[in-house]
Image (cartoon, rainbow, N blue to C red):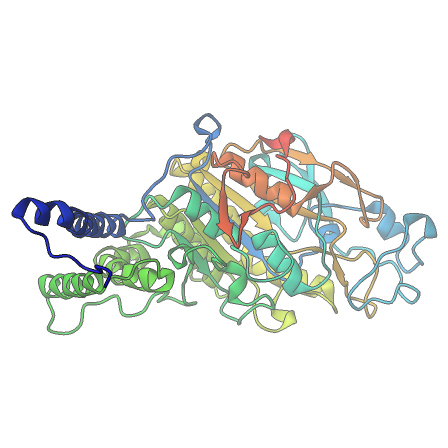
Length: 475
């Protein structure tokens, strides 16, 4: 019979033939230690930018005006629109497709707002934003923005993730993935929703998509207590809480979570929650701000108190190293958003009344504290509104032309970029898509849109699906 197994005849043969087995055991032990060490590395630790020479900003505050504020009533005055109020749009301006508006039935709707010139270059701003107008020298007014959808949800996905369908990482998650966070005791990416409710795009539009779950946003609650349960449990000391967290961590590490992104993120939240119990109460306690600062933000005034608190909290967060903050204005039913399908002027004045003072205060406060040059501030919504009327007094969604404001973080303020036609229907000079706003934002943070990528299903994905261009006039 053939010899299938032969016992070694000597000690020398035994060790010779066992070598590979012992080596595999040793290698396995070494790899286990290496993997354990790798798992203890904080993925949110600060990372170097791709382009150190380009870095102007370290953090971003996006003042998201959800619903679609009207550009022709705020930052892009159109005298011809007022002159032609109540008339049909001339065919020479072209055809457009809207969500609800019937082009053959609509008439042009002039603006009820009065525009005045502000700043060194006399930039026109409407009387809906008297406080923000005083900061216009610090802001670049980009009047030539456009996107690809007339639907709230789809346009919101494109605004945040660069893609029309859901499921892709938001710009906040991309930036956290690229740069990490400068704070180890606060979330690196924070969204502060409007208290009136969820938007059409839902919370997924802020999400991490296919990026590891550690890069998802932390959603703060509306009101005076953005985060619950920050106090230690009754009868538990800091030392006892620390021992509990350490025990949980050791058990998790013994279990070996490997590449489970969701479980890794959940484990990290235990450590972050403990650190927030130590430091976050001070961040959320506005009583240590002087009265002048509180009044500047409109805190205490029923109209401005909520957004004022969130704008002030945004400043306090970036001051402590948080990378990306989104105070959202607008939520719930359409009338509670910047979504003036009927009575657009009433909607604009009401929403601006909640936000104008807090936004201007944030800019002033960042400058006073030396944070303006290192913090990029963006202001805008998911699209603009039609120059034609909807129902006589309202305006429909308009993705073909709208305005964005950008300032701080190395942005050259006090200028207008781009032009729309005489009715505000279409961009006619220097068009800039959401992807160009994204690229400009990344550029100011020292991030390259191609290098900032993630391999997903065999494809290198990035924030800008189509290559974006930096808005060169403002950097």
